[in-house]
Image (tube, rainbow over all chains, first blue to last red):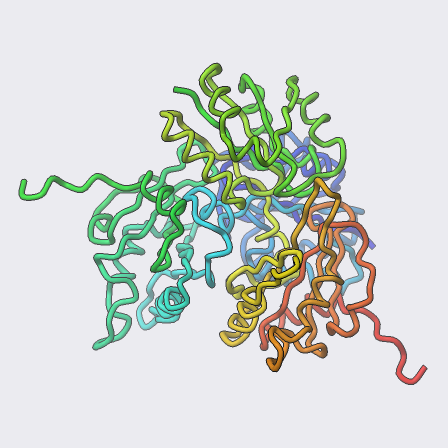
Length: 264
Length: 264
């Protein structure tokens, strides 16, 4: 019986690792990671490997999902580390991996870290308990542009709740949905004849690179934000509730973009 | 113009601090903390002060909310640290402090850390995007036992969403609401004549000490869990959605408490 240690790596780079996680990783016979559910600054895993004193073995999605390599490692060493940017269990495939390890008779442990789910509301100064269901916006595919994320935003707003909109990413293709792409989706009608989930004159917030030194926020109407360049990924969007607490309003005001002077 | 650095300290103790946060705190002329919105293992702040090489000054709620001490510190040094267990902006008073610093012409920065908001779902293996609005259960006071948390649970369930129930704490009085106390509240009728928010035969999850080495979870009906001792704080409760994804079901099953043998 071995132990599979799930370690959250934070939102920016290898320096987000806690002392506790570093110590625990040093006690692991092998350490794996993946780069398809989230992504850190380039070189983070190499530097982390040097800090730990052990090479981090990068697995593909197929390798993680097949579970074979990880289960074999658990069969041959007492403790195996699995390091994931953000929260290790935000991705359901990693819960599946933990269940597979349990079924094979192994233990697991969990070292949580910063997650965009709490850090984006914190950065924008919005109250965590006023958020409704989180929404993930996938890249549209031919024949696949689900309306459910848009309907969830509308449902949250009807209950006077904010919505955190997480944006799709395909790190292996260096494809990261920008907030501008996301906003363009949100202001489109969900279906022909329906009104859009988010009216173009609704003020929304964009947060980019939260948890890194270049974290930045914007607050303005969709129409004002649509054509904007928000810089390098990762981006997310928050569609606020219809009513704001006065401190939320003040916090968002500090991110208010300057409107172009009228008539000029 | 100085900088107020908000640093999240994680969920267990001083060893949860990241290398990035440690470096940033070392560059602060003064460092403050508070112990009323959350709490770490005893001695954590002393040890943290030794790692940083500077005493951490503990402020009372009144001192934080008056903002005077922190604004004075910003007036006399280039960078001031404010260290908070969990996420620094989960508490609205800390957003108010950040706004006060901005109004006084100062900058702020934010180093997020693990928060119970993402770590409890992760620990229990529940999908983050299937959670509705978070609920905080306050200690009942004479004439103050709000029904709104209980109604939010019912609303989330009606949308097939999980609810994370955070429990009140008063660290200065060494008072922490236990999951057993919380469950007793949940199975009571919201108002006379109404049905309870959570039927006693509904299976719910309890998570205790998430993020620490003694993290533990339970899954069972309220009736089964009600009299149980969940060990030292902090506890939280998750009321699951009416339907579970098969992996969520498998994850919760691993926390299933053993029922007493029937008829014995």
